Amino acid sequence: MMTRPCDALPPVRGSYTPDAALNDLVWFRAGGPAEILFRPADVEDLATFLFAKPVDTRVSVVGVGSNLLVRDGGIPGVVVRLPGSFGKVTVDGTRVTAGAAALDANVARIAADAGIAGLEFLRGIPGTIGGALKMNAGCYGREIKDIFVAATAINGTGGIVTLQPADMGFVYRKAQVPDDLIFVGAVFEGERDEPAAIRMRMNKLVEDREASQPVKTRTGGSTFKNPPGHKAWQLIDQAGCRGLMRGQAQVSEKHCNFLINTANASAADIESLGEEIRARVKANSGIELEWEIKRVGVPPSAERSK
Image (cartoon, rainbow, N blue to C red):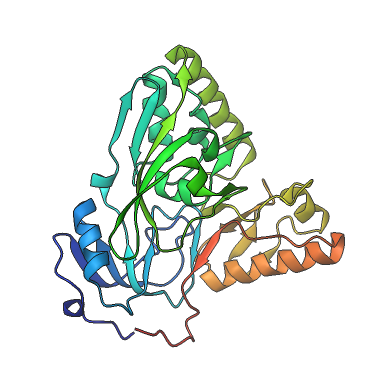
């Protein structure tokens, strides 16, 4: 594939990797490469890049890829992946400050150890805080907006932005913020409780999740949003889709709202299986399912612009 030369991009202290494989970085273990993968050294390095990059440079962000499908043609432009230095977690009273690269589960554990309740649900959400902010992630009746205090992000021209709850526009599985914002950290508020009690609730949540979801497979988490008044998995089951396959992609037998890469499924297999589910559910119930998994990149036949 044709790749924009890295020397056309501004000097950074982090690293550029051209034609970088992403399939090992996403949970589906499928999909094409990043035209250029950028790992910034720190917040200042990321801000400098965004300020100085050519104006026509496409920029996107990939975390740990737990709720992401990268199409087989890969992602044009520069894909930002925040390294571990963006994953620091600190506690002050009942507030937890977490970098965008911090794993949701790790934030939950640190909060529990500090005797801060209310963040237990994060233990059941694969992925990082950055992704959780973007999609107002949640499970078992709680979501990011319930604990959110403030966030810090960098905009498309390198400016540092602080966002309060009113700025986030939280709705079901989405924060209504500008697409060019890259979150770098957030502050959450919990409440005091005994660490042992918090851990007990957290462990129960993990047990329930493992019992009901195919968490140890190559999956992308919940595929479709729950329509108002309905459960997506029930609609999928009622439409006869449990176990349905397309190539080596399959609807989970354990939980119908999960798609699985059973071996070496292509991203096209996974996406077309999802579209077949949507069509069958629409025909059966009249309800149109909306993707929860974020699909990015281009098909292999598409010409990738620089």
